[in-house]
Image (cartoon, rainbow, N blue to C red):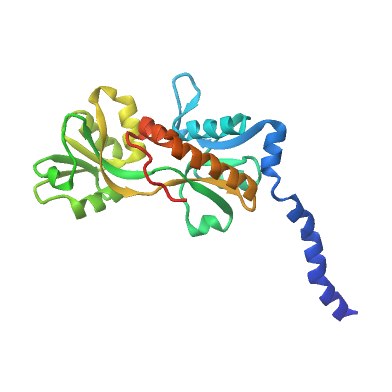
Length: 262
């Protein structure tokens, strides 16, 4: 009897799992049926997601969420999340998608799935449009502001010419202030910091100049929801082909999306 129980245990476990397997792949159908897609977005991370003066969320991730909802022909219900709770919201089905500067790595791939990349996330060199800067060699003789110890500081040190005057500041606020006030001609920083700076100081005419490091963003999908993931991939591919992804990146990050991994 005991042996039979041991043999039956795996079968019973498999049978109990059947309803779950059958219930998978329902997210896309559910979205289309209720005519609403629930999308987790950031509201504290400009220019990807932040609350504007009219108290409405805006930014690249918000625009991407609305683009996907529009292509699906449903309403976008935007759900503010933080870095800490964005994946749990997806796992507990409080959100159908997470569009919140989500990078893909092996640990996250164990618990959620990812679409193709939809936008760049990068560290770069920025300066005024009036300052020609098309190669690292042209940093020679220029003053460059960077946050001490940040990734862009370490990477910049590898490529900047000896004649570049690199001025290091203790935090991002100090680095941005130095650039805005004219203490430095060039700023090396992350896309989010630069995007927020350009949004708040349009009079400076700042633009993307040189890429330091690229780390693209992906959209998070609940594990096993392949129908939804593949549909979103279709939308991303079409938006890439039509130039919509480049336009979003240009608007919020000051540069086109460019080549993005699948």
